[in-house]
Length: 551
Ligand code: FBP
Image (cartoon, rainbow, N blue to C red; front, side, top):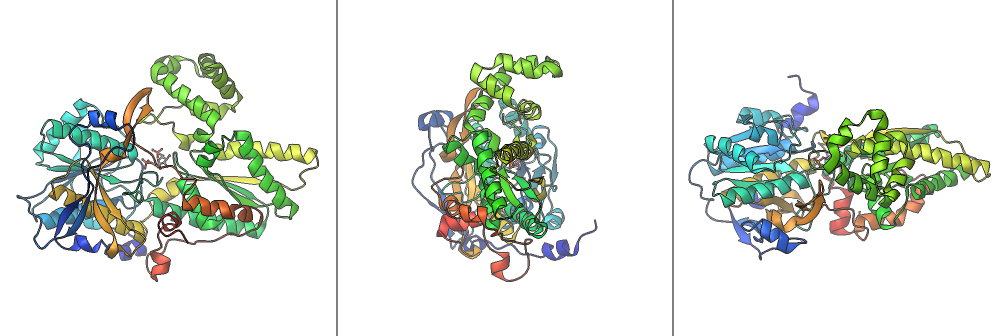
């Protein structure tokens, strides 16, 4: 395989780890824990793994004791995120340190590989090929939901056949929820297989006090911010286009907010604020058009608008509509599928409550259709398929035309739309993600060595130099609550949305009026892998604000 010069040089990068993981470790146990909400229901559903303590690795004078090789299976689940290969490398190096004959098996294309017994052994030559690279191609990923006893039993057969002692599931909130269910099930039948989760998702919404961030967020935001910065420099040069840039993030707006903190766009919509202020689509259009009109008065008929991918679901009226659609489709999917395409819109309108039917009817044809497309296996609307950026351009254009007729707007409006998502999900991990992921993988192997199951690997204090990071594990039951999915209440990891009282949003809020009117763009440039630490190792602005209160 031909490699770029950067790939060759980057292969030699040695990820940094918390100092403690370089030597022998033992665990320090904290107090017992509780679920974030719905404690009784969660405890009933997870009688064995519920309430276990948070653990932290501390130095030990004796090596961790393992009775023979520690064979481990690994699954990459859900959307790609930069650094996945380093998690696997960390697990590999960790279990090899525990016992030289330990083996690592990768299940292919996500949970399907476990269920259908498709796997490959990850030997040192394969691992070395993938160190510090982006992507999940070492074993591939998939979105199959691991949830039935039949799947768990089928999986157990291959785990037993390969002598696998523990399974590491690298995934987002839904996949780690499944990891927890699987851990409980295997413990309940004394299967002798531990299950450990690792927090992955560029969306940044799998975080809490113990899990500071999900891996991939840092790199993906840096890639999008580079592109947004380049666009800003372009529009500041030609001064004739408004760029509407949608950025990924299925639900929460962490990516949009981080990109705004890095680039200072003229507008950034934060879905959580839209929900809190109960804004309608019209309010959002007014807000954007207002900034465009004000800049036009200053002769600036150009600018940037960042739109979070999940926006549509946060507009309260549309959220209520989607909730009803989800329930309706969960129970009537066959009838809906059999309805001829040309009659689908009327069919849906006839089945919805009066209020939601009116909203559905008011949506442009393509957006209405996109809202009824297949849910992903976790029951989520596939928001990345909804072209909100185009919808907003159309609506803003109409609003500006109306204002022009009333003499309230005299500018010129020419818009270009972009959607940045896939551009960043497989980028070569930044130093932050390369180190964070390798440490997560290594911590996962130490959790296995200490007999834990139903835990997520955790690395904290990550705005400090890597050697000072804190490694340990968090019981996944601690992150669960009950939510409605596919029309039923299910235990799921609570998604971390943007906190409107948190330092990252507050910083944005206090600067956005100035960024709107003035041209205060920042051009972050590409991720740097070699060079001074302030250029190469800077953690995300979100983390810096959350942990240090300043950037
Ligand atoms: P995960 O939550 O699985 O990490 O996926 C994140 C994400 O990149 C979202 O931002 C996006 O909405 C979704 O995946 C797109 O998924 P797909 O590529 O499967 O359409």
